[in-house]
Length: 277
Picture (cartoon, helix red, strand yellow):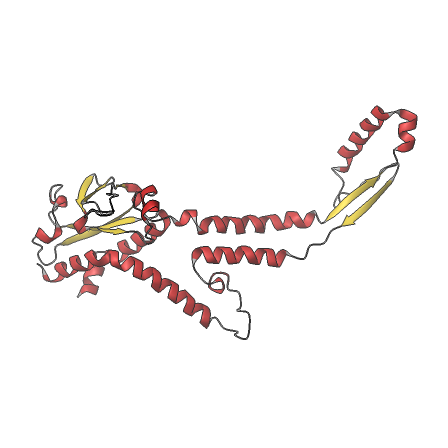
């Protein structure tokens, strides 16, 4: 059966890795290595090959950065964004695209495809930046909390200006500023001073809303419902995650529709492995 053939030839593992690489790097290539393959046979068209039962030796997958892929950018051309051959650098072979699955999970319009050499946009330029913003915010909150209280030093300068002059007052203020940098509630110091020291308390109650906005942005970038990522309870009358799971399932189904059309050649090759041509 096709299920047994996919497991026997290692298709399932390689397909999973190829789809992962396609989302991370913007594309990947999945192709079979037939028994008795030679460099010249890699260039043969699939429909002209005589494939016997059990023809697949193994499956191979590489990400887009390990291939040389020069598509045609003429929209009316027969090979628009689909070249006849593709070079796999790691194996040092040129392969006919008739036997390869070129996975581009997020198709792009014409002008964007030209800039990206026909590949899809990478997730590394999308949700991962939103995730770094969340991590940076989480690390910044303790620092922000430590700065909630400020020390305010008030010193009357009129009398000092009249007695010692402006230059001496400026020197005195610079010395005081250096001393106050080491003052905190964790390291109290006893000092003799002129003037008053006050504590100014600042309050900020928007941490939860601020972090929540960053979480929502991250969920939007990944196209996954927020409760499914952060395990946060749904708001409103519902106290379960059934609705979120339905939305997540719909998102995965949409992604599957984009990917499965690139796997059509793999299905035909597995059929040939089971029954021959």
